[in-house]
Image (cartoon, rainbow, N blue to C red; front, top):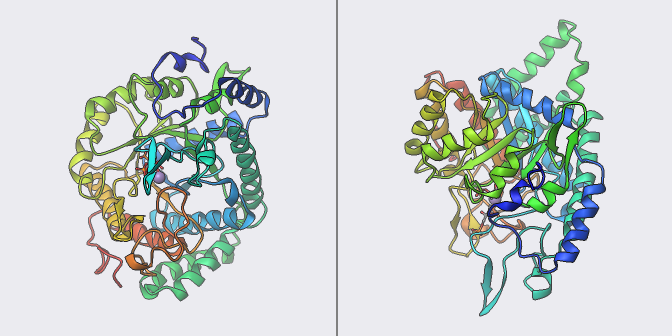
Length: 457
Ligand SMILES: O=C[C@H](O)[C@H](O)COP(=O)(O)O
Ligand SMILES: C=C(OP(=O)(O)O)C(=O)O
Ligand SMILES: [Mn+2]
């Protein structure tokens, strides 16, 4: 019970599925215990070094992908679309910050969801809530909603398929900087905010031409370093995929490179904090608007007792209306404690609203406002706004309102495809990257250009 993979079992574990059949659960986790790891310890160590650069203010994190991946959408098109969107955003951010951008997909493992309510009601019928494809099905029938532990095997297999294509694409030519830049050129040419983004794209083009003219070896521009991560929610799954490294005696969660603990499961006395205190991966924790400095200091003590930059990331999702009030105290207390953590903004989860049509949605301008508040707080404190964590897709969905392609509340039903929370579509994601680039460029005190306060162009 005191082993790194099992010590969590003695503690309350929030948001775990009520698995109906313990024998099947045991069989499924035994199967998972015997399969090869999805990621390798040295890759997790490399990501820790990359995240240490973020913590020191020498790099920026870009993390994004679906709120909930689904087995059905493990397709080449969907994976390529998300990857392409993230790579396009990363180029813009790299240029604007003149820093490396650490790229992490919310991909290859984002199959389990914490829910506000364990049940969902529709027209007088009550069923268990959908908890992600790793647990049950989205369809509103008693059969689909019954938790099935063998879905965790499918989660592993779907993650392996996704990771395989991601690894091939990022090393096999798809991620070539010149190609990604050409996509951005296409986006700017079609964008309603074209002129505003054109200057930055022109500058990137001139830099590429300059490097080429100087004879700089541009071989490295053909590949991209890319990591994957997900919420480490299902402890049966995570502990079955935990592996010890014989050489170092360290233990790693091998389901993804960086895992995070969600807002609903970050209890200091709970099972998630206990499990993640035992593995050597880089770890993140979401912080909502009610987070107190004491909680954050407790999380630092439990998860980063040695104060090692790169180990711990705090992902702040306070909401656009709260971030400016809540964040300064948290940063100041952590800094005073001698911990060098990464501070990242998730501008999605504190800004979810219900549209008149009943769809869960988020407004692009509110999302932008939370990121701006986050950057402003860091500017005032002289600390580093370490990056963003967003829910996005490469598809032209209509789930969040606003942005350059002006999704209207009355049009949300056109392509509302998410299995859980509303995602930025491809255009909205690139709009966010260009506007974030402006914020990073202005963060030393220059005034934001006219219009930077909203996407109304
Ligand atoms: O993605 C995050 C949570 O799972 C999600 O926001 C919960 O949504 P709910 O309030 O509909 O359960
Ligand atoms: C559940 C999520 O977020 P949070 O824990 O911040 O609510 C999420 O990232 O989908
Ligand atoms: Mn979500």
